[in-house]
Length: 581
Image (cartoon, rainbow, N blue to C red; front, side, top):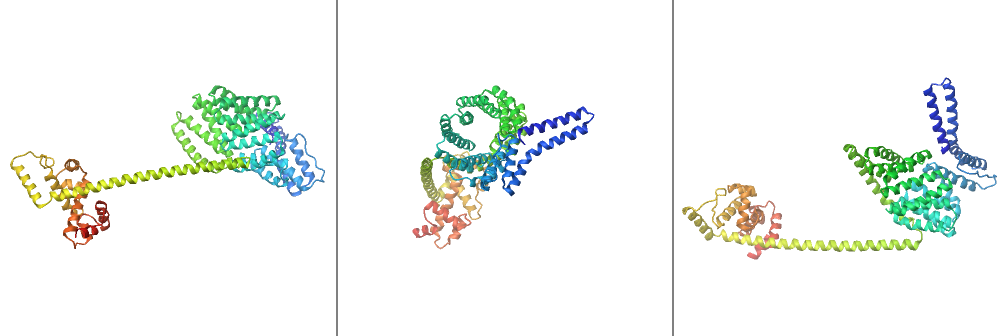
């Protein structure tokens, strides 16, 4: 329905309610009459669809004339087009389908608008100004549908036609459209050059209505870039022009834009007053997209004034409308506003809104990745596009080279550190093995036992917890550790806990005593004992199978034993045996 029909519809519904409440005497008769009027008003909106269906089957001048007459009756055209019946059918189809697309676009029925515009497009000659209008309409339709890449493609074709024409007014309009597409793709800095170009071209012609539109877009661009001081004079000038022209719908849009700029300037109370005034206008006009944006901005104005409870209903209604329209980006913003509003009011609701925000954000990233290509499609001038692509590719290659070099350097340093640590561990283990062999040699072992007996005879104090001498010589303690570990190797039970238990110590005491005596951890010392037994068996028992050597040294698998042995001695057990033979 048109704006006039919507107002009629609302008025009649309201009047019926009043009649019912007042219990008028002839309510039934009056209500039937009013319902008939309501049906007539609603039927006019359906005339367009019916006539289009009729035209698709007939494609005649009579139906086309009736179609344009209905558009005029609905206030969409100042005067209807008149066809004589001598026109080619393709010309009729071109005109009817294009204006059908314009009609549906004005009704926010974007799918239908796109279908009719695509049907009309092939009927225009290449390079024709009217073809540019159709391309421009298709670009706007796809922006509304969220298909930014396709919108940019149509806008580029339109701009190429207008640039060849040299018509400043048309060039300004096309450049403004391209800037708008960049804005829809969240590329404000790319949009800036086009909007400045549009302002330059529109300054050469006398078209205040077009200038107001471009000024409004300029304000939007700088507001998105965060330069609200620069955005404010643009939107104020646009509002003044629309006021002089008496364009009420555009004035409402400019007021909404100004409210957003005032929010950016932290003038929240002023922004609130503007939205209170403009929201009813936008809703009455049927511009629900702008109305939803105003609702969301109103919520922000209240939230910034720490009036969270008041902000919630505005954000809720905005989120619902954006969801219905498929405007994912603005829906995300509305849910984020709800999350912040609920934070101090209802933490559970805040958590639910945060979850919704995260889900929508993931969807947006997937969608935005594809739409990011639109900024390349919308470029005009092949040289500029190629230069930008080359620059991006070069920067990408440089980043890859630098990153790869850094990764290789990190890997090289890590390998050097690992090698150094392994070599140190190898030397430490070999040194421990030699020390263990020296301590366990028959003459040394007997001497140490004698020293231990002497200490007992002389009454030297003992560590009650460990059961070992408190003397500075740790040899008896180490010999006992070697003995206990060797006893457990054959059975495969030589854990730190078992060794500490067999020595009548707690694990912590055992660790502390061993570190004090050897400077190494229990794990490192147990490995040294294993390797000492291994080299002894490999040397003294040349015919013993490697599998049996591994088992006697506490290894379940010969492969594991061989890997560990190679890590310590740099060769396999078999190679070690051959060298010693």
